[in-house]
Length: 86
Image (tube, rainbow, N blue to C red):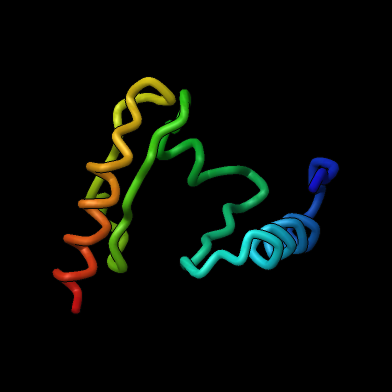
């Protein structure tokens, strides 16, 4: 899928929904504001993997990627969080 840069929250939401449906994602998805305030706050440049709990606390943050990605550690953090909140 290729989308033009969305110029409204509605267009951004439509693109996100299309990705969720097409990729069959089952995880909750958060949609940033048009100002990208969340992206800026987490300073995910270069890319990082995050796990944010239901209360909004960061439970895992990878080193800068892609070279700092540790998928095994990220998956373990997800499993640990699921156990913690269950």
